[in-house]
Image 1: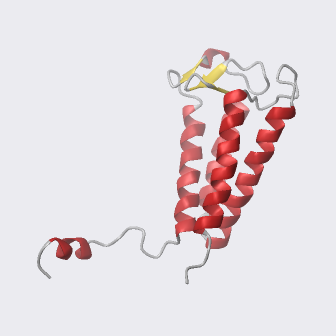
Image 2: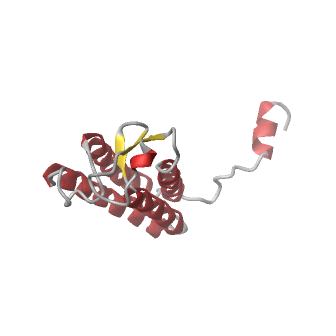
Length: 152
């Protein structure tokens, strides 16, 4: 073949053979790993000198908005590792996205119900976290359902 199609067909597609649900789970996993690491980086996380292991007393804010603690960051890192491990199979990737989305919807409800100025706010969560958890929950479930459907 000659022309622009010859070049594009000659290059292998790096996504060949990988189901969309596996790519989606891998991407979400990598994003959680990135967020977990950034939660410890001064400048990206404001108030790192006030970063606490857990609880509402942590004065660190990722991007100056999302309240984080060491435990919160470790949960993001673990969630990212789980995403990469489960993305190795279609069933695992779909389970990660739908199950993880359900977990984030529960975290959203937790953020609505918990008294934020008590020890019960162990992760910690604020209003920005709540909206993010709602979006993540809905988005992950949608990804799991829409990309996990078998192709005709």
